Picture 1 (tube, rainbow, N blue to C red):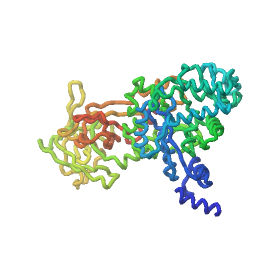
Picture 2: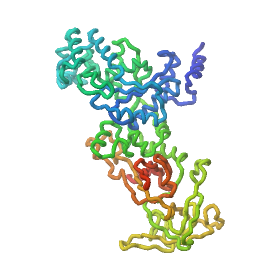
Picture 3: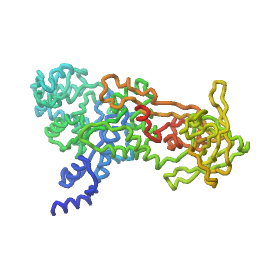
Picture 4: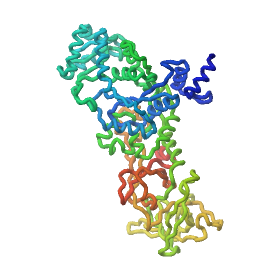
Length: 570
């Protein structure tokens, strides 16, 4: 069979891409490996989070990449928790990670694994390295070991314990496992090359004593493998063909490969790609934990947080996240993606899916003086003009309605196309009204606006030919539902937080949350379930929050209708 025929066959077997599709460098590598029958001609990836915090938008990109490749090439993707640091891990984080992945629409079937599943095997690997003269017990402190590792331009210094007999190291290692030694008294180091230009190969620590209870194994172990030692071997145990990591792990790859070679185990291969850095955002679990523990936000799922649980609560959709990840792409070099692209992806998705409703965030009463007192009529309103199957709903209309305070000006400029004295506007789905006056309170604030309506201009039945430049949203006063609206904005005011030299918390945006407690919304909103998404016409996309009560909905703004950030901060 010639090469072209072979490739055609693999296109059928593996669902490989057509020539017209642009492939990223990882997809190109995968297709080449599959075509050559490398590692059995199968694709097996994994998503390996550490359960020491909630996942963020950067993890979402990795989830989409690993699970997405498995879907595209008829492979498999494992979910594996790299739980080698019991002091920082918790089942809360495990549960949140699983929820996030399922929300994104991915399923690991029965392939849920933990590095702790392999603790016995990893201990056996370490024992093998000791016996082979490739590892030794070092009795020095972490500070002493770090000092002797040298610098990128100066070689390290051999430990005085480097030539310790294997039998002695093995005995101490067994005693460490049995709990006979205190934390900090001994570590197990790989014996590689203290003069290597690659710092990770300068006899790295691979086991340390930690007398801490593990969230899965309890107190069975008091020694734990380091991440570098457990990660590659766990990949190998699971027969992972393509171990995909972000660029900060590139310098660790020689160590990854060294362990696999010395242990003679399945040759998993690590490939690095650029992590997702987002403008006006931090994507570091350590920094996000600082925000949570310092009460700068209300929790890991605060809608201002870039955690997957936070953006889910804010109203972002799985499809919008996947589309964003696709637009960002997979690169070999780090860069910074504009958060406006993420916000655009959300608008693009919700524009097709979210029904429109009427709401007034900062209400002022408008009285239609020539409308019959005591009368209420039902008007037809379009649910979603982008979805022909969304249908219509009925909304009440009467003599008194609420409009946005900002939609009326006592002395409007010429290009203000909303309401002012002697000006006409259309109330959406209703009538054309003309302002005849207004009333102020003792503080000089306008509290009521008076209008007259033209009954011949009813929306959908208007044959008058009358045209107005402004259309206002409104809510009928007698049936309006009082709601709390939370207007979320970007958590930080600085675009590139990777370049700052001071504390990142100094760059928090003081206007990242504005709460409107007197908002009025149409009756249908009061009946919506938690998680329902919709568009307040002319204002943006919103979602019913879990803090809602039976009497008062709490509503989070997902995103505005357009990007006002650059204009506001330019």
